[in-house]
Each structure stands twice: as C-alpha cells, then as structure tokens.
Image (cartoon, rainbow, N blue to C red; front, side):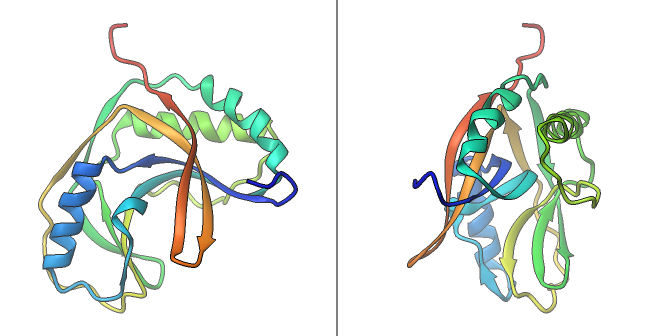
Length: 176
C-alpha cells in the first residue's frame, strides 16, 4: 500500500467464514432485494475512522493492543433496516463485552486525536445495500463466538470493494 495516500480505516469483527457462509445462504434464500454484500466482506464495525494518513498506523496498532476485553458470544437474531437502504442482521441484545470493546477503542482513538461519528454504537452486519423494503421474515439466530478484532482498510477495486485486514488482536480468555 502506498504510504502517501490516505487509508480508509475501521476496526471491526470479521465474520468467521462458516458463519458468513450460513448468513449468505440464508439471505440468498429470502426475498431481500438490493445489492448483496460479498460474503468475504461481512463484518461488524466497531469504530469507523474514515480516511487516515498511512503514518497513523504506527499509533493505531499499539492503541488496539492495549484493549482488554473477554471473549464473548454474539447472537444475531433480528433483521432490520438501518439508514435509508441497508438490510442488516443485529443482536436483540448487545453483550456487555462488545460494548466494552467499543468503549475502549473509542477512548483510545479520542486520545489519539481521531474524531469518530457521534452517533451511538449500533451493532449490525450489513447484508444488502440499496434495499427499499424488507420482507416480513424472522431470521434464525446466528451464533458468533467472538475471539478477536482487527483493523481493516477498505479499498475500491475494479472488482468491487475489498477489505484488507492490517492487524488483529485476540480478546482475553476468561480466567486467564
């Protein structure tokens, strides 16, 4: 990656491949219109940093390494529209460790001088974009064991948007 070009960065939970496949199989079997998100791009954004200088990576990685949150289970069991046209899977309850992870990242980013969107954190996995209405369906409960989080770069390529993992950090195993 060129170091003079700003990077479009975000911290996220990458959807494990088996779960991403199950989610996409379910989504594709429903009548959810719009432009489906590629299976490889399914994730839950923890903090969107926007365009940042490449030099900022040197400060972001140690900041993330200081995060201390226990592993947890996430249950995606609701289908909702977010914004004008995003079909998303969401948890009916946000686990406390997920909220702690977001809070620790936001606090670290604030001390690092990164200004984040002021909207409250709303955990979700975007399934499709450009959706006008959702069918009246209840998704199955998708269980996600969360063991780590990462820093990602979003790139527009000729084949679409691609997310590259720049680094990842494990969460703490309770009792250790």
